[in-house]
Length: 287
Image (cartoon, rainbow, N blue to C red):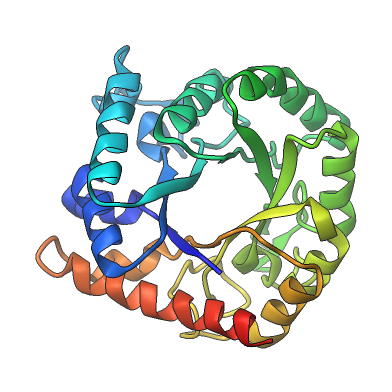
C-alpha cells in the first residue's frame, strides 16, 4: 500500500517546490497537488480576492511543469490533486478546468473536486458531467468527496452533499461514468451530525471508492490532525478498506498538524506524518 500527502500546508511554510522535496525525503511514495492557492477566497464576503500566486496567473502551466521537474528530480510522483473550493462561488468554478490541466501536467491520476454543498444530486451531476470530457481528454479522472455543513444552534455538523452513504452513492451513480469516482474524507465521515461513519461509507461505496483523504479528529470538529492522535478508531476503517479491495493510495490531508511548526522544523512534521500513515498502510497489509 503506497502513501501520499497533501503539500498545501507545508507549502505555506517552505513553498511548493521545497515541500515536494521534503515529502520525498520523508519517504512518501507520492504527493497530493493541493491547488488552494490558485484562488484566494474571502469566506466573509464570499468573493475572490486579488491573488499573486503563480497558479492564478496566465502562465500557470509553467509553474506546474516546474513542480513536475522537482518531483522527478526527487523520485516521487503525483497521485492526485485537489481543486480550489467552495464550488458555490461561480468565480471559483471557472478554475476547475485549470486545475484539471495542472493535474495532467504533474502526472496526477485523480483531481478531487468538491460538490456544491447545498445543491441537489441532479445539479451537482450536471456540473461534473460538463467537466468530464475535458478531464478525459487530459487523462484525468474526477473524484468528488463527502462534505459537511454546520448547525450553529446545535453546534454540530449537518447534512451536505455526499455527507451520507446514500447521498454519496447517489452522486456517483447519477454521473454514471468510470472516470467519475469517490474520494472518501475519513475525518468528514466521522463527524457526528453529518457523516454516518467511515467504515459504513467505505462498504456502501465499494468499487466507486478510488481515493482517500486521511486525518484524525475528535469526531465533532473537522480537525485535520495527524492520524492516531485523536478519537477516530482506524481499525474498523482499515478493515473495511481491505474488505472492498481498495487499491488506491493512503493519502493524508492532515494539514493542521503543521500549524505549530516553522520552516526550520517543517521536515520533522512531515516525517511524523509519514510514520503515522505508514502505520495505517502496514495495518492494511497485515490483514
